[in-house]
Image 1 (cartoon, rainbow, N blue to C red):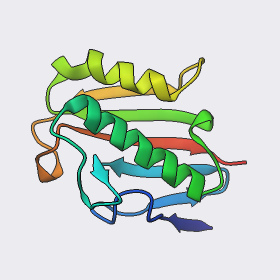
Image 2 (image 1 turned 30 degrees about the vertical axis):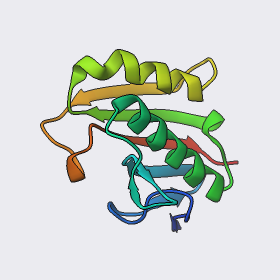
Image 3 (image 1 turned 90 degrees about the horizontal axis):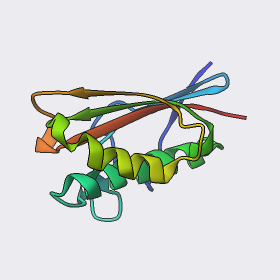
Length: 124
């Protein structure tokens, strides 16, 4: 059975809700939206990445898991030149061994942001 997962502690429904299927949580791409204000956290890519990951953590918690069980991360950046800085933020949220990851440069992201991050997280 597929279950929709959402929380007031992460961005609202800009994208489809995250879903849980069995022992997997599939978290939709998170934008750097501060859930307290509904606004973007910053124009700075480092702060945007941090907010995306905080949103992922909040959704994981709402589903009964946490980021330590992350299996896969996908990052979308509008400038691949930001990868080193974003990777520093990414590694601050995870302990070794780090989850599998992929990063792609894209022409544009919703609402003009610089980064969007999704995840696959184990539950249980």
